[in-house]
Amino acid sequence: MGGSERGVMKLRKSLMSRVVDPDSARSVTSQLRVKRWAELNRRFPQLADMKVLDLGGTSESWLLSPVRPAEVVLLNIRPSRPDDGVREIIGDACDPPESLLGERFDLVYSNSVIEHVGGHAARSKFAGSVHDLAPNHWIQTPYRYFPIEPHWVFPIFQYLPMSARLAVAKRWRLGHKAPRDRLSETLEQVMNVELLDRTSFAHYFPRSTVFFEKVVGFPKSLIAVSGAG
Image 1 (cartoon, helix red, strand yellow):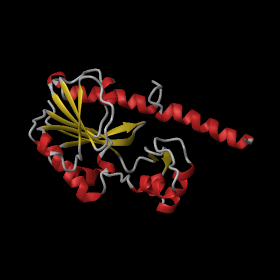
Image 2: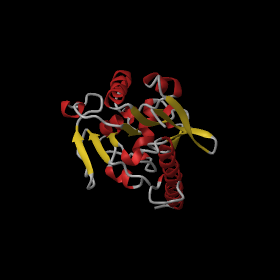
Image 3: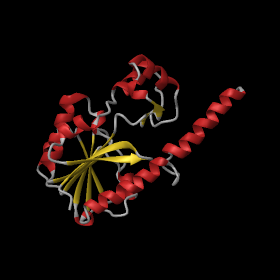
Image 4: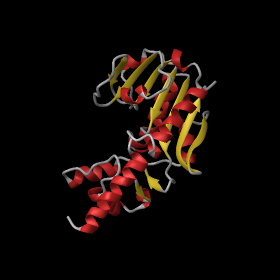
């Protein structure tokens, strides 16, 4: 390995620690997570008494919450490993299983999922599920015009032509998306992410309060909240 390559690897490691490392309390990701939980608890002070449906989430994320809901149910396409006290249902948030439709939840929660469901029609169905399954919701998604794309942690990645995004995705290893063995699989990864702006996001949640989550003054994420106290 040459000196320049070692320098690039060192830079990537440093950026990973400062930006996206979930185990580092000083990383931007960890600091945002703490603030996000605090804001959720502020808007829903009764969270500890709520039955929450998490669309596409993990039980590990709820272990980090300073307040644990009375009940958490995960809805995921593929099985995860739910923690004790967390129930998981396998199904599509855009077309929830019948068994789920018979339940009533206090809050639908989702973190960075709607940008992955696949196009406007699927996002409309996702939003419909959110509205149908509970009177309250908290839905977060990365903001399209934040200069660093959050999945690959690469500047202006989302504005590049598809061929350029594919070239970056094959080589760049800083973010959450590791390159796949097959080129077609890496392309699927890239095409599976469609970041939203405020206008389009608010369209799916027209009666919600939509606000920005900011980093050093720049809008980083969008959050739609309904029914908050």
